[in-house]
Length: 543
Image (cartoon, rainbow, N blue to C red):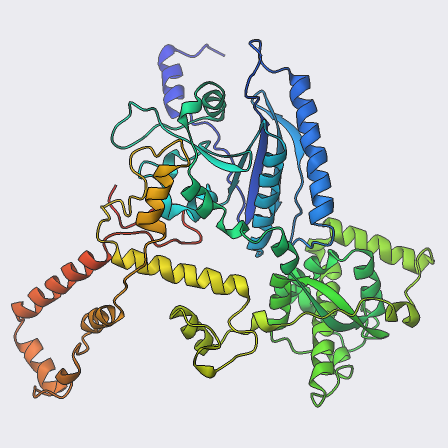
């Protein structure tokens, strides 16, 4: 084969594109822990020292998990750390698919922050499928230069604090400097003046952790259900099996439902026989998914459900039926056969068949815990929501509703969202980039600057004019904004329509244009805080 000419080489270079780095799967969080000593030796850090320090962190993580998450149930994957080496850098890496349970993601952030507190020379980076989600949480307090395009490798957790790497001091205008991991590590070790710590940003970024570790136990829900004895035995062996079964039920398809369509119970792995009442621990997300689904009972189960005269017994039996169907679909569906939980369950069932394990007796089951949690957090009525949006408590006006609106966290989160929206509508000082809470490159200190920002922004009482907002919305929808205008003498709607078709009045166009400008003026500034956006700022803002 003839050698390539220089022209061919240049053409190949111009058309060659490196293989892109695979994107993080949806509903997943990726975390990395690096050993970066504050006073490295001139010759650099030895690989053996790095591995030894990371092994210590691994050991601490295991102790934390055992202490804080002893009875915790993950929606999908659990928290785990493995020592890896990539591009010559040794680190601890982990990835967790949290499914629909956002709380699992924040449990992981809490664990990472605790590890960073216990190990002063460990720097933590955490991202999910939306990128730097900690910055998304703190969107309203970020400096204007910090855009999503340049955020990679700038955001760290160190000694329990949020640290952001600032751009070079001599940069003016729009910041385009992107950092690689190697560059970021070098700045951490050699340019500490570029490390920004802000109490306001940190408080917003870690706001969801305000009730941890107490909230960890509140992510679970215990309920009484009536299920086959085999399933009760499985959940007694390993409560985490519940998540896979609930997910199989919730994501069922026609193929998964096939085993449940038989009239007899001969092909059932868990036939509706030998039913026992037990207390089962769910994730809150999983319990809501199971409870909220309308699911007609398979024929073999119909005769096993009590009448609705005893609503309590019926609810327990119905939830047990759904759970048993979830386990049936989990083990029968061919696409689940490689899942670790399925392989484990089948091994346990084999031990039961061979006599190596025995099912619990009725006497044993009576000694098990019969704990049952209140379901008030599931109940959300329009009246409760309306009161919460207006900042009123459930007891105001002499009326009390059981459980109120969700739980305490739901109260606080909703009030916070409303407060943010009011600030967004009332922010007259915001520029095209939105509310500039932090000027230029921020500050290294946690003192006066943060206090000044807090007094002007975070703690400022919003002055949302509800009547003015209502008037503007009515005008925008073509409704009369003043009460007296509704009955004023004017042509009928049909006459108005004829006039509009006959003459294209420029007055109407001018009114629409004026209203548009008025709305633009009112809504121009500020930041609404979305849960999930790739941009940290209002997408309608100009660059």
